[in-house]
Image (cartoon, rainbow, N blue to C red; front, side, top):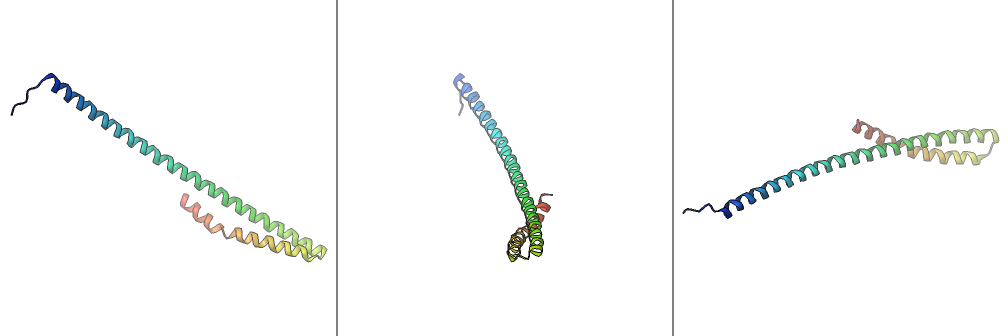
Length: 114
């Protein structure tokens, strides 16, 4: 079977080749876009990790502040001989203790990031 090479056939073949090249270019662009999305997600995750670390550090600082305040209240209770200050100090110490329980998680997260 012989197929004649007409102008229409040649134009159609050239057009098909252009469409194929265009499809390949679209795929390349899609891959590049997907790669950029992956990088962006990784950066966002890292930012979230740093935000969590900041929150944990603030929790630690708050815990230390609570303990210092509790110490001052206990000293005040000793000097004024009022039991009310002891109760307040105990409440602050409980809060500080809860905050301190978060520290091992912070240390694990810091090790993972480093």
